[in-house]
Length: 421
Image (cartoon, rainbow, N blue to C red; front, side):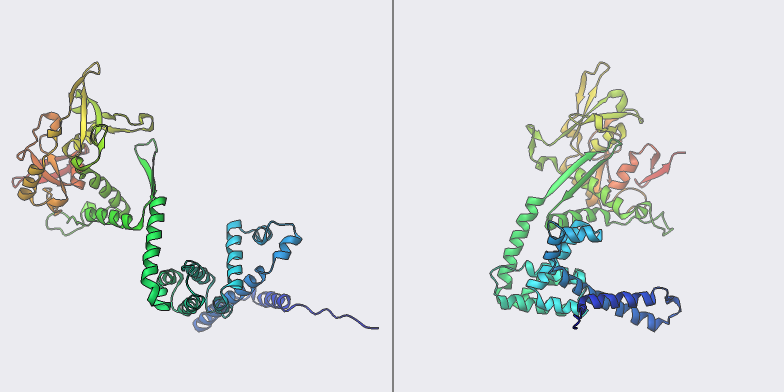
């Protein structure tokens, strides 16, 4: 009588051994290990985890029949359902498994040896997939070997940057031409993806989100940082940080964006409705003279809260192409602000030459980064002239129009602020 002996597949036997080994240490307290043992154990487990990932991916690449057995659409769908993983995550795992099995033997061996992490494997695979299709197999193989070697020295983020320029090493004779083509494709795709969306929140703020090409985003950030880079010293002689230095960086960038908008030259903007781009603000004469009042933006979504305070309207009247439409008692138009209300280029140059900096006491922001302000407000009949103008940085220009603060002119012409009590 013969007996059939069924031997267990090595993959299953290994899985059982791993579970048994983990059972052995499930209750082991790591606190009492010395530092050298902890270091070695952590590194060895990390390497074992990488090797285990490779074994799992090798199996996933061969699981089409398992998906069919369960009537699943594909391996990723079956794996996501069985392991309670997100479908997108499971699909990425299966895609990587198939790439390793089909096209990336060197990378698979690096993962199996524990020399490459799962995230590094994803980065290397993506970098190789992005190589030009017309390259020879020998060039791609050389690039794969180089990237697997670099995995021992660089983390995934650095590998991603290296992968973008791997042809400089693997095939320098074609690298420059291919890099130019890649950049051209990237720039075109970035322009097609670019977007900017505005969503009024109804609380006096508007949320916006966008996607810009890297070059444009870099320029934008550089412009904003030009407005945030000046430092305001503390009060005279005390050497302490000024109030502007305590503003969080993200808020400084937002304030700088506002300042940048206000420095745009309306004469250089595209025509809009037959005139240079202009925003019109409706405000009654009484409101214009009152601190606690509001002005309405013409053609704006007023239901979304697109109003602004009279104080804000008065501040914008100093520099921006904001035309206050002053209304009488029955809503009739008494006056539409004129462009001469805005300081001319010649007056601005004279102000910068005279003041050299923001004229707030203790502020050192250069005049080139400042805005022109009417000493006697335009709304109260103040002329737009050199004698009635002063240079203020964006921070202090907001402050001088803030009703919570009073200010005085010092004998040397500087402005000193006081918080109202």
